[in-house]
Image 1 (spheres, rainbow, N blue to C red):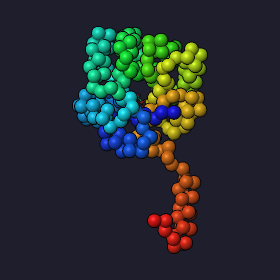
Image 2 (cartoon, protein in one colour):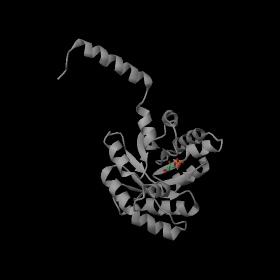
Image 3 (cartoon, rainbow, N blue to C red):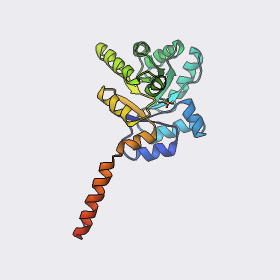
Image 4 (cartoon, rainbow, N blue to C red):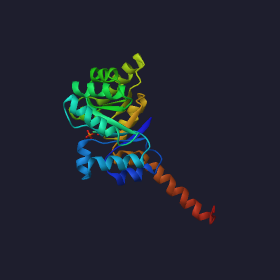
Amino acid sequence: MKFFIDTADINEIRDLASTGLVDGVTTNPSLVAKSGRNFLEVVEEICGVVDGPVSAECVATDFETMLKEGRKLSKIADNIAVKVPLTPAGLKTCKALSDDGVMVNVTLCFSAAQALLAAKAGATFISPFVGRLDDIGQDGMDLIADIVTIYQNYDFATEVLVASIRTPMHVVHAAKLGAGVATLPPGVLRQLFGHPLTDKGLAAFLKDWEATGQSIL
Ligand code: E4P
């Protein structure tokens, strides 16, 4: 499973990229607004820090303008994945960009039918939002299971990029279902490291080691 981080905070990205565990980055207009940075500048900077796909989202809603935005974003760096919403104009833009060899991430997916359309439009990634479905009382992971099955049935190349992740268990469930990518808020990626028995065990080992009076180096 690939791990992307879901943030436009360059300091968080630099810090987590240094772990060697980050395969890409996703941003959205809300995350860019939160960063307080110029969109095009921050995306270019992120592309210089992370080698893998960096999603940058279009904000137009009509096909012609969205395609222009997507083409402009795709020129920022080779690892840009243009993000488009799951709307008729978004999928038309997806098809045009993917025909040109540009990576496309189709976002705001909330149904298996939508995911099927995105794959047929040549999406590189489909982003189903599990947390937002959980928020309205639907199990977001049921959607991931459906999409994984449908894509396997037809051998679609589109990767399932599990988005709107809120907890480490979302990541574990998505991995058990065979989703290709999870995009994690930085805090959730850090939470994956933790277990109280790891902390307790390490403290005991170090205490016993100290009593030996030895050193390795
Ligand atoms: C994905 O690309 C989105 O940026 C993101 O996962 C949305 O998450 P949220 O529902 O926590 O805003």
